Amino acid sequence: MKNATLKQLRAVLAIQRSGRIVNAARELNLTTPAITSQLKLLEEDLGVTLFDRTQGGMRLTAAGSEVYRTALKISDALRDCDERLDDLRGLRGGVVTVGAVSTAKYFAPRLMAAFTRIHPHLELRLNVGNRGVVFEALRDYTVDLTITGRPPEDIDVEATAFGKHPLVVIAPADHPLAKRRAIPREALLAERILIREPGSGTRAAFEATFGPLNPALTPGMEIASNETIKQAVIAGLGIALISGHTVAAEIADGRLVALDIVGLPVMREWYAVRRSDRTLSNAAAAFFAFLRESGADFLPPPMLFQASAAA
Image (cartoon, rainbow, N blue to C red):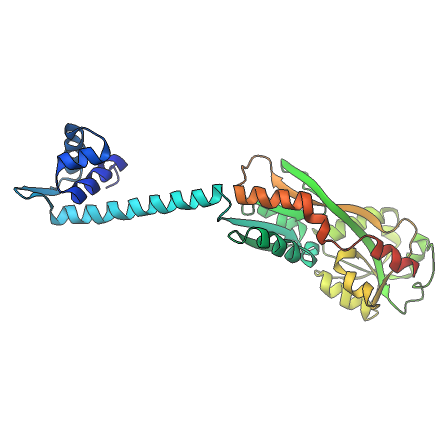
């Protein structure tokens, strides 16, 4: 069957439906010799007879029944594919796979829920990981787009900023620096610093923000989870630079404070990122546009972190 063509299989289906070659030709808008030729070529290629020619019309042989069932499955699969493509063209169906850095998991589900309320027939899948993992998925084409605080530099991408991304230094509410104002960065030299693992966006942001002080800072634990860093800071194990969006709830209820350090919060951007060399499906393009136009609506307001430091 590997050399069978769709025209030949359609001829088999039409002959079986109509019972006669002349009727199949009329159904397919072809000539009778054309249908006869398609059938003959297929029988010669397979080395079997597909139809018995009887006075009552064309009747499938045992071999013909096998070919007919296969042709029917292929026809059904092609029809299903056409229907799915129609759905995708009309945003009535489709799957969008989104990669998100771990910091974004604190707002991405709300954003995705809002999108699915607008497009209930689309399916969104969320893959969360550190920056290195998410960019590897983008590099391997296993996600349609990513949500990240900094676009990759080694992949040809289209990156669209959609909202502010504050980075703050957090401490427990009873920390000695909690009520101080305009704290110089050098004051951090006396503190134990909790940091994320290499490869995470938060670690890169820490190194960029405190570059000159890095060699003199007192290292604390290296922790591969923003959630664990939050709990460690609440427990008094140290302070940490972290995305404000991961600690919005804890700052709002008073379990953590954002220290009023000179030059902080560092205000960065959230980006929706897609590969430039990949054509997005209509569903993925719609989600990319939604991020660009409405993503900021699902982020905690930047003044929350300013207010925490000024309280």
